View 1 (tube, rainbow, N blue to C red):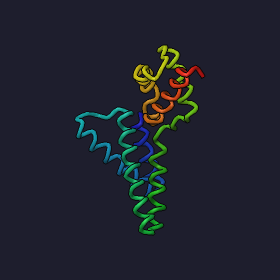
View 2: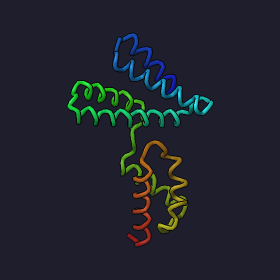
View 3: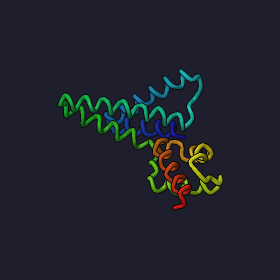
View 4: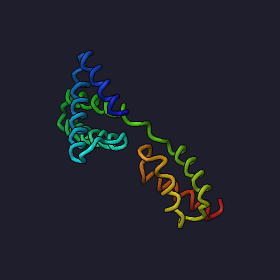
Amino acid sequence: MLKERLMEDYKEALRERDHIRVSTLRMLRAAIHNAEIEKGRELSDEELLGVIRSEIRKEREALEAFELGRREELATETRRRIEILESYIPRMLTDEEIRELAIKVIDEVGALSPKDMGKVMSKLMPQIKGLANGSTVSNIVRELLEEKLSGR
């Protein structure tokens, strides 16, 4: 589904003659194609998001270099590329949303202390994969379990 959206957006960018969007989506399509060749199959949407995040990371590194080199024109173009790529990434969960989901899972699995962290994380992470940073989730779950243990 995500791949189809990328193709439609690419065609639209071509029609609109939006050169930065065209080159960004062309670069992304090439990265996806290379990843598919490497895996020997079509990528799932989850894997596509991984490729997109990887490209965002590369663009951010380039942006840092352009800013250090005082290349404002290239930095502006790179910021636009990052915005385009980020438009394909789902919105990340807030700490409060993660906290709510974690509380539900803690109650479901009957976790009582930080020793039950593995049970909670194994049930929670599949629900929020790609929508939250794993270390953030881990910190929130640990904090909740410690609160539960101390009886707060």
